[in-house]
Length: 474
Ligand code: GLU
Image (cartoon, rainbow, N blue to C red; front, side, top):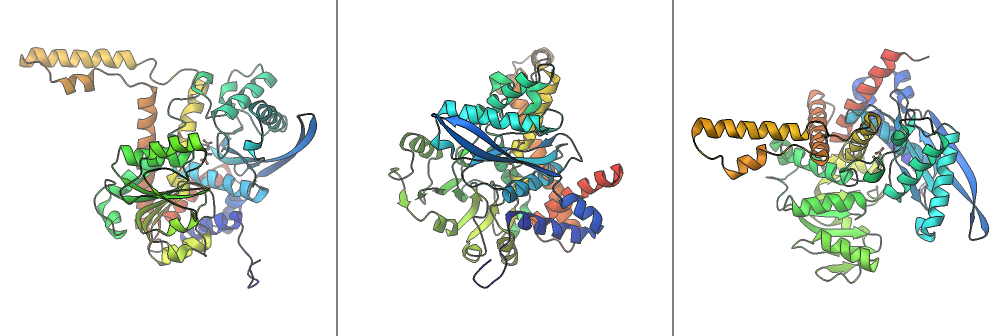
């Protein structure tokens, strides 16, 4: 409750209210809307682990929001603030996200209440494997039904432990590697998965800038180049997004907000340097080439072209939404803008590229990894050399026909078969482009829609409701 006695919205309420706008636009049957919003099942486990001679009891959750497509998919976060409501909200977001980018999965999410920094590597391994065993034994983890991935506080390392635990408990499952995604490449992972969410954010921004009328409506012009960007969170997602925008798109990262404050430099920060500094010093404080301020949250209100919240949920709330001075907000994190803040920003005409689309690059490449695991072959393995030979033949034929040598760039472009990373990036780029175009088409086909979030939800619930109606509800 707030001081005024108004009920504060939970993360789940916020996601449901956002989905409700789409149901209203579509005039959707109330029962179907209810079925789509309901969280199918939630598991809470408490398990003991012996740490340094003392028994500690850990609490974890896995929510399966939807099973209209299987497996249900979504990350597992390890954090010292995580609860059932949050896990359920994040699972619902996964349902909407997968539908938006046409990834044929249901939505799920997991969380373990833990401060990963408080434990040694071996202890983390014990705890992770124990949590995985609980999920496997209770039917919440398998290549066919429920496939976790990295999220906040987890990465390749944890995914490798989970996959190995599953393999030992299910020696007959030939598809064991597909029980989790985001694994190291040496253990069945796919190239390009680690950077995928951040890269997807960049592909989303690039696609936005291909639509001149949308760019103009946001009060912007041109492309990403030279745009002044504020980013919150230099974790896995924020780091890759900021790095690519800085190095490939010539954007200017004018502020980086982290847990312990913010770095500001109007001329642009070198993202790689900041990351190296954080890795070494475990803080951003003292980074040369920038002004440090302790009040990180206040820097969300900096005047800028693009604000990218890439850290936690509920960072832009009814409290600060009125003071946001970005021309465009791109949600790289899940749920960084609350429902109330979203209403305020909509009224102020600040467009938001929503989380369920903007950060869908991670699950998109997870989908590629899962397919790779089921097919037991690396993408490009069969055709790469064949494509190179064909390129060579084309160049040779052209040279014979014209009597001239082919220029170098033509040779380089044609005599190179695509490897796995090329294919992953191409598939990701295509996915992000098509999804934005679908969102835009939805935004333009309904007079009631004037924001990308409602349009994205319309695209999503339209697809999900079709599968509920086709399969039937029993
Ligand atoms: N945790 C990521 C997300 O929130 C990735 C999920 C996945 O790859 O399954 O989208």
